[in-house]
Length: 59
Image (cartoon, rainbow, N blue to C red; front, side, top):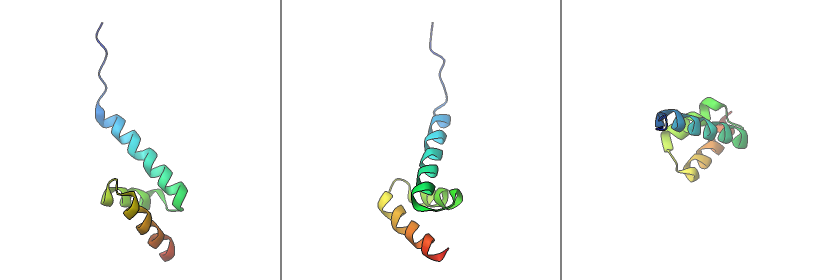
């Protein structure tokens, strides 16, 4: 019996949301701000953390 294939998009979306949640919790950003930074900088966590500090300073 063949395994049922799951779409990769669902797995990627779940992983991205976990990243959003983690970033929001560890930086005191809102989930929307965290999502924006992740979309803007991809996996460049150094840039994301630097910019997260800026968001916190403004808010």
